[in-house]
Image (cartoon, rainbow, N blue to C red; front, side, top):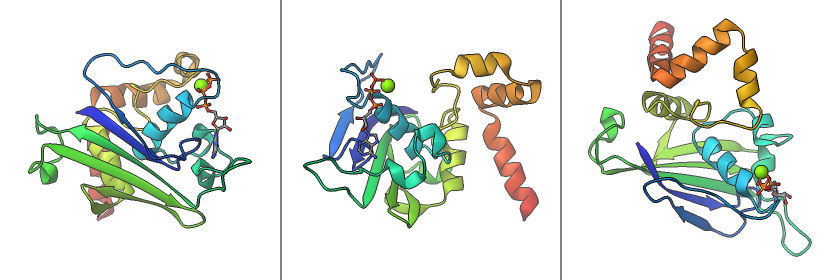
Length: 183
Ligand code: ATP
Ligand code: MG
């Protein structure tokens, strides 16, 4: 599934509502140091279900909320939305009545975060399975963090197998089996 748009509101340095259209083909993000390039990629990982604040370069998850500057007060919430093209009906069956899947994650200070898929409340697990089936997501090998190449080279066989399973798109099957076993 292709990401067609990314919308940010109050996420890290993106205090102004910001919407990016992602055209087909290769997209480059350029700009001076500190302008928010890495924040953008973190927003992408966050809305795809990232659970580790450390990998968001944050001391706590609330720190992804705009923390204010000399001239602007801090915000109390942050929201990121991604739009996925579902013309090819690659989303899980329950979303196959729509050409677009819209996923939102919103965090309120001291109250944690919640997800919506096409405006309906969703569980973190729904988001996880959706992206695992699409062989992408917050921990996907398609999103390569700085330093990660070295980590893969040095990974233990068990960790490396997980990376390969994610790449092959079968991680979603493991999550479903785990869920079935819990019932
Ligand atoms: P470089 O080229 O050096 O890698 P970059 O474009 O990747 O830079 P980022 O790391 O994305 O830049 O952005 C860093 C900026 O984001 C810093 O100015 C930092 O103060 C700001 N920032 C990070 N978290 C927050 C937050 N919660 N609230 C406000 N600003 C934040
Ligand atoms: Mg950077």
